[in-house]
Figure 1 (cartoon, rainbow, N blue to C red):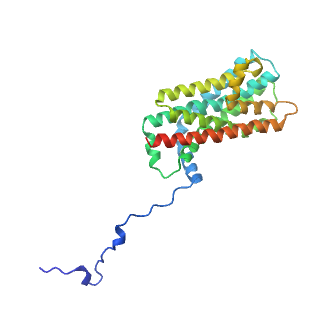
Figure 2 (cartoon, rainbow, N blue to C red):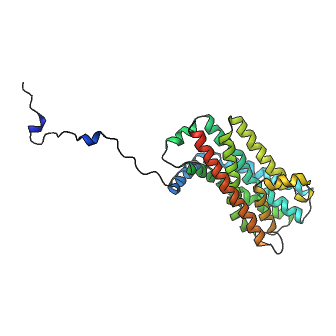
Length: 273
């Protein structure tokens, strides 16, 4: 039997060029916005199972606090602080408590390795998860606000301000919650930090500032959710100072940008370990 080279046969296989042996070029990296939307949808579908218990616990807790405070304060400025604080507390419960637990467990279980293999920017992972968890707070916040206004006899005319308060205060608190979960060396410590943050939002945000000592007021000013509470509480006045309301919302937005940037850095740091 004789062997005939493939080059002399008609239609025979051609030799593979040497350039094919080189490394293939990588595709372009995914853009931030499409990646963020993809992560948001994935997180939203994953957490959809726990949506009803989450809404019930966060809403029932905030409504219970408003009812409890009804026996302590009357209508007026203090009632405005109670209603605004209990409404924003729903956001704090999810953004600080649950998000810190989620990222703490994700880091401990090696789930960050899965996201590290995806061609998505780190900021999309943090922002997508934070936005998905914050989405569940919208119904509970609205229900708490309406119930609190009816309980204390406050007007509902400026309830639309929650459209700005929820995402801005949620971004500031979600960044802190994600950073706590990603920087904590153990998931138990991440849970503890989230609980402490939510307790601070409860004590410093719901209780009227006029009854607090000066040292506690200074600590209250360091909590970003305080400015969301103040922005919402000012709208109950007969003639709200909208410039001050916008200033409070601006503080929430600035803290949100910084806290989410810190959370993104913490994600990069945890993902490479």
